[in-house]
View 1 (cartoon, one colour):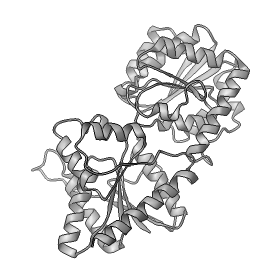
View 2 (cartoon, one colour; view 1 turned 45 degrees about the horizontal axis):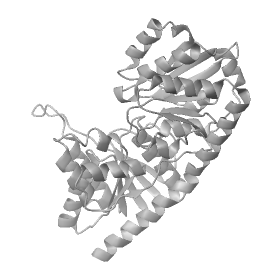
View 3 (cartoon, rainbow, N blue to C red; view 1 turned 135 degrees about the vertical axis):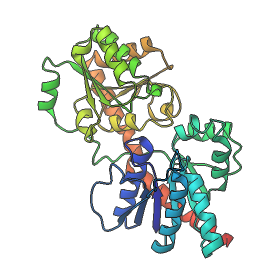
View 4 (tube, rainbow, N blue to C red; view 1 turned 60 degrees about the vertical axis):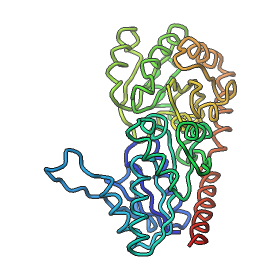
Length: 380
């Protein structure tokens, strides 16, 4: 198949999933065309089946905000026509699904090309941005007009059907993990440098937005630190980083907290970690938690969104109510205080992560692509 993939090219979850999926599809013999305003962060190697098409947005004094949606639609028309694509797969509803609909109509009415469009919903495009009344009609229309729609968790599907007037089915295809990359690696020298006294190492990775509750990470760590000698690694960057840094000083744990910024090789850091903290207010799936589990790191998380579908309470870690710092700290201490117990949680985390390995999930997309293409062909 020749597939066009539209995504945000950043380190965010939807962009990472889209890029890794495209790379895997290309390795499996499909021709993949990425279409976005910048080369995706993880599209960092050459492959004969991978192509990148930049969406150029011209600067005009007339516009306070550049018309990216129109530029993207025009680029989609161009790529579909000249690369003979079989299908467009857009990740994140806003504005990709509406741009794809515009391109589909132009291709059909002007060139007689009926290109099928699959939209994957990732989370904040529905749970936060999509609920905004200024976007809701466009999101609803774009989902309903897509030829196929997937969601990364059952919870996200339920949320979409609850908040929007959706007249079509949504298929759940969960996020996935590349176990060749995300696996526990022997980095004992790195671990010794971080925890010279054999302290437990806790870790949190995110984009440090409000929804991630990064200050709760510091509060949880403070309670654990009071009981168990430990270190905390904060991986990522964003608007809440400064508040988290200041809180670590106020709670007098800053000497044992390291803010590492954005890291490409996050699996290296996870490999030396003992516990992953994810106290988010909202998570449609929890890809960062899955990456941790694949590296044999159990998870203490909130019970919001799709996290209960990923983090098995009492098996791969524990779930707590959003904001319940005391319960999360208690669960963290329970896992970390006993070596044999910690090893059992680590083993269970890896075993559960294997269910989400890329080789299990990619065929679901391939089958769905073919189903949508066949349905579109029959409708002609």
